[in-house]
Image (cartoon, rainbow, N blue to C red):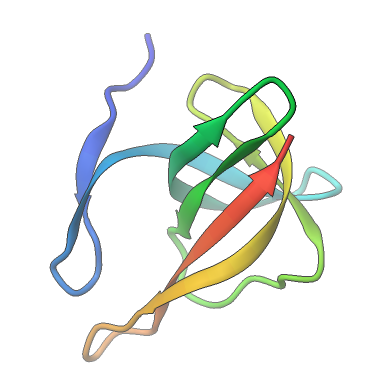
Length: 101
């Protein structure tokens, strides 16, 4: 059964609706980290959205990744850092915009 989408508490106390849980892989299908994601647009040829890695640190924006969605679809995509959400005393968390197919 698919998991329910849920609100998550982002660093800094902000709450965003409709985030789901997925996985991030390298372009060679090596598992990198779990992610929280939300889809912003979806059509027959492309998907765009935002994701927040569960591990701290920065991702390389010059390579392609694979995002596995909750429904097991895999999106080959590129990432672009959208927002740095710093929280006092914790390493920075980054939100990335992804566009892929």
